[in-house]
Image 1 (cartoon, rainbow, N blue to C red):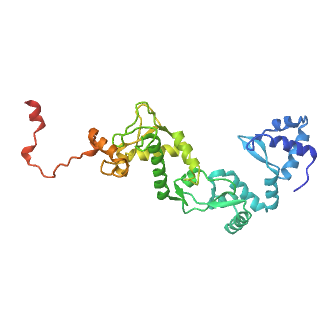
Image 2: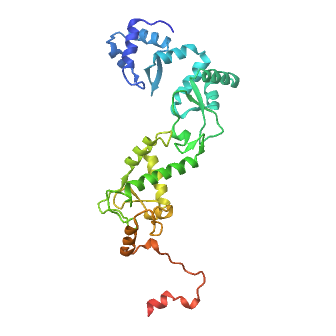
Amino acid sequence: MPEVSDYAKLLHTKMRESPASKAFTQQEASNLINVTKESELMLLLQELLNANLIKLTKSGEEIRFQAVSIDDAKKLVSMTDDERMIYSYIEASQREGIWTKTLKAKTNLHQHIVSKCLKNLEHQRYIKSIKSVKHPTRKIYMLYHLQPSIDVTGGPWFTDSELDTEFIDTILEVVWRFIVNKTFPRGDDEQHSVNPLQASYIASFQGVDLDQILAFINGSGVSSVELELNDIRSLCDVLKFDDKVEEIEGHSGLFKATRQSLVEKGLVRNLEELKGQIPESTREYLVKNKEFSIFDFKTEVEDYQDEQDFVNLDSFVNV
């Protein structure tokens, strides 16, 4: 990498103190080191440009200067002119990546040269190829250290551009069980004398919110990618649709497990199933004092009914 003067190094250091995305106008760069002469500033900027320590960007019709880290500058120095041009377009694509066909069109290079440059850059781990959910047949490249955007990967529910139904089912079960443990009284809870057949929500219960679920999931290690609040909301919406949880009325984002979901999972036990699991004296007391529960009964209507059993509603209303 070409040597630069101490004054040019100072300018680069001052520019690097700002966020990496900051692009300086000529006046802003001048103010950093109190350069009064435009010609002097331009010489310093040219030094940095020759050493790949800054790059030019455009904002409207105005040229701006953006600092480049020393490590990135060393990468650029090691590249050929063609590789450097291709790298610059890949860098500009950020987390969206860029299609090889687009690269060829923008650089106006022969396909063989583009392929060779991409292979060299990928071998040095400067770039990487990724798969896109929207365009699965396209080969897309982005900088090696960046993570693709959700638009490219499809979010945490996709693995190698395919919907991971097994992962979704697993995490839905984990979320549901977390809500159950937090919202439904347990018959074996030593701190509360709860009839396991009549367990219900306490009147003051406020439910489990999305932040609590998010913190639990991200802390549990069940997902290799960190989920966001919108992801948790989507999972809860699925559980609501499946009638496994319900949103507490008047409290958006607060959830509790439905009793029906516990019945379907066999988590609500009847008196016969409690034999041997609780003292027999306790079971007999529960039998004696058992209140009515809709979950102990079901009605079945026969498929065939005589037409005479039906009453015309209009006739009934007019009686």
